[in-house]
Image (cartoon, rainbow, N blue to C red; front, side, top):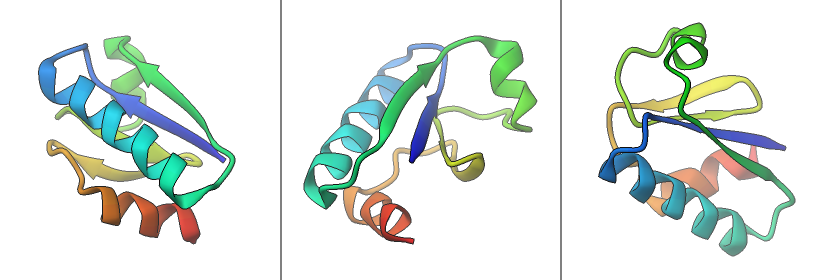
Length: 77
């Protein structure tokens, strides 16, 4: 599983990355978490608000910090 946290490095983006990593650990799944800060790469996902979370190429969240429980649900599907 590949998870990308999209954002330029703002406080909300850092918090989102932390919550994603906690959710992965809690769910006990194997996942590679990558932080993407390049604006063109972020735009390539059709995302124009950050933070955003992409799971296996599918945009799951844009413009907010998702709840840990919400992320765990994404990881189980």
